[in-house]
Image (cartoon, rainbow over all chains, first blue to last red; front, side, top):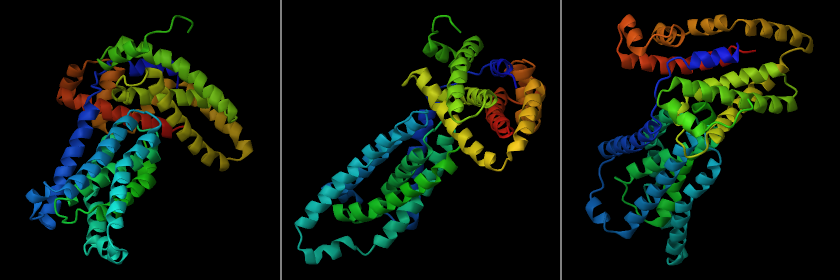
Length: 213
Length: 184
C-alpha cells in the first residue's frame, strides 16, 4: 500500500477525540470495581462488626492508608503507561514503598513481642481465607482495568501488566478489609502482601497477552 | 521535508479537536520521521525498506486510532516514538519467528508477492475492509472512502450518529489489526 494513500484515507473526516476521557474511565474503573468487590465481600463473608470503632484505631487506618497508597501510585502508573510513556518500572518500584512502611511497622511489632509468640501473631487463623479472598476479589478490578487499558496505548506490557495486577490486588485487599478483623502490621505485611503479590505476578506474566494491541 | 519544524503539539491538539487538515499535516510530518527511524533500525537487523514502509503504515494507523492517548504531558515525538518502538519490537518478534520457517530460496518469491501487493493500494484496503462485519465496514466505507458526513452516513444506514462514530472507531482498530496481520 502507498503510504500517502493511507494518510488520505485516515485524514478524511477526522473525528474529534477527548484526551481526558481515558482518565475518567480509569477513575470510574477504580471506584466501580472497588464498590463491586466490597459489595461481594460483604454479601459473601459479611461486614466486620466493629467497623466504626476500627476507624479510630491506628492499625486499621495504617492498613487502609498503605494499601490505598499502593492503589493510588499504581493507578498513576497505569494512567501514564496507557499513554505510551516508558520507564514505568520506576513507578512500580515507587508503588512498593508503602509496603516497606508496613514491613518496618511489622518488624517493630515483632521486636516488642517474645519470639515464642511470633507464630501465633503471624499464623492468625484466617490467613488461608485472606490469601484466597484478596486474589478472588481482585478479579473484577483486573478485568475492568484490562478493558480500559486496552483502549489506551500501553507499550511496556510486562511492567504495565504488573502495575495492573498491583492496582487490582490493592483494590481486592481494600475490599477484603471490609470483612477482615486483623489489622496488625505483621498480618498485613505477610498475608495481605502475599495476596497482592500473587495478583501482581499474574499481571506481570499475563500482561503481554492481556494488553497486546 | 526541509521546511521549518511545524508546531507538532498545536497540530496534535487541532487534530484531536477534529481538524482534518491538521491531522493530515501531522501524519505527513510524522511519516517522514518514522520512515527514517524504521529504516535505520531495520538496516541493523538486515531487513529491507519494504518492511520499514509496512511499519510506517502500521504506526500511522496506531497513531490515528490511539490519538486520544496523547495528553500533552510529554512531547508529541516522545509519544510517537513510544508507539513506534512498540510496533518495531512487535514486528521483530513476529518476523524472527516466521523467518526461521522460510527457506532462503523462497525469500525472493515472497519479496515479489510483496511488490504486487504494494502496487494496488485500494485493493488491499478493500480486501482488509471486506473482512470486517457490516456494521463496522459500512461506516468506514461511507465516511472515510466516499467522504460522506457522519450525519449522511447515519441516515443512509438508519443508525444514530453515535453508532456510526463508534463503528468507525472500532472498525479502524480492527482494520489496523487486519492490515498488519495480512503482511508477510
